[in-house]
Image (tube, rainbow over all chains, first blue to last red; front, side, top):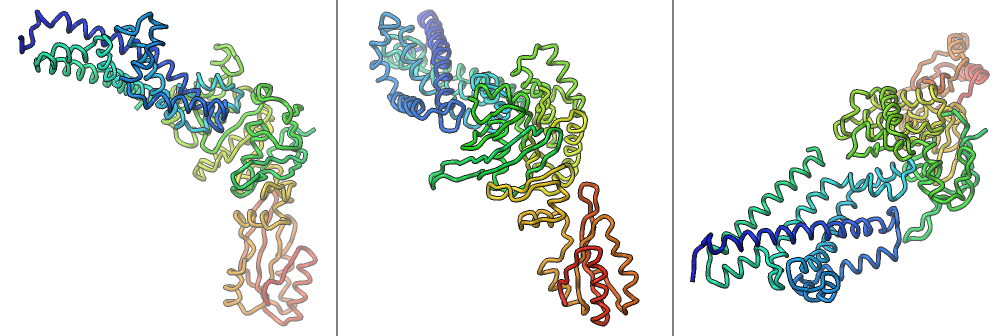
Length: 222
Length: 339
């Protein structure tokens, strides 16, 4: 058994795994992130005293978010299998795992979005209302731009969390670096493969955090 | 013809402790082109009152007519075009931090659907008017408080409103900057004929720029009239407190105690206004064997009229002092405050 990293043996699978991780993470960030933004804005704007203040809608949304969010990802993965099959046609594979990942991210990031919107000074919303801006205009031209810096940081955090969750995707044949580290490293007593996989993930996270920080600094102009 | 009219307006908020009337039966009419001050302590209902004018808060009962539109009955969506004819500035400026100075001023124009070229021209015109053209591409965080309020004023004027609501617009500014902003508001009123409703807890603001004033206390208007009438002859303790905050010319209990301890003669307070010739009477006091000493007081101005009071110690035989007091009473109001 090969106890060392061997490029000829591992290289191709390794690159493929990186590709799978990037694919899962990017697709999840887009789908789950957009859904999270929508749910987060809905949570924010239906709360008491907000622009679409609606007690019933807020209560229902809040309940659903609190219901889904605490479910451990590995259980959610299995629990939504019927839905995944409905959408993707199967519940195994790299593409299939994007469904539960996006769901988890949608509900998780909605809280981050909501928290960042809540910190906006109500005075600026009042100023926009005072010049005749309607609620939709306020959401798109004011709330999101005003909270953009913290939102970018929030989504950077989400991005890193997705990389983490995507490692579990190996359990249903999702592939990716986490799966590679387990299948070719840990289970074959090959510590070098484990560490190289981990190092790659660390580099990925560092890179993403750097880009996130840079963009947030630009948005915050400091 | 009034531009803003309140008819028996109430605004009630529901709180855990039950309904609370923030505005409790107000009748008010504000004339086109005037600067109208609403003064009151915090909690008097000023901020609620001003928000009833542009419908940011909706009234509970009564009627509010603004620029010919009864805004008490129309829905939120119909309020939006009305709001573009009413500018508003705030204590904390409430600028959009994510937009440049120019972007802030352009925002109401975007909302009102102005095309880009007209928008740009209007923004430049407004920034020139408030003296901040060179800051067009700065962000609000890079400005001083006074500059921020200038941007707020430019933004409020963007869509050529007929009315400007100023909610404690100088309360976050230092005294010198306050003067600059008040001067700018006066310029807005004079040059564009815009009616300004000034909400404040600072008597000095009302004194400097308002034509008429209403004193608000616990959601009710307790006094109203021209600034001079209300503050030269205050009828309520609230109005009296405000007047003494800028013109502390009448001795209070502590002052009187101190004066009694130092002066042996009789002490009287005489009101001073334009044309009251106290000096003529006092220079003749010697004929009654009476000397006098000025012990307290001051004379300032309200709406270009002299206003204040002087407290005098009159020393001499009682009969002579009585004569002098009688002569003073013939020309102004006199009160003997300590014998």
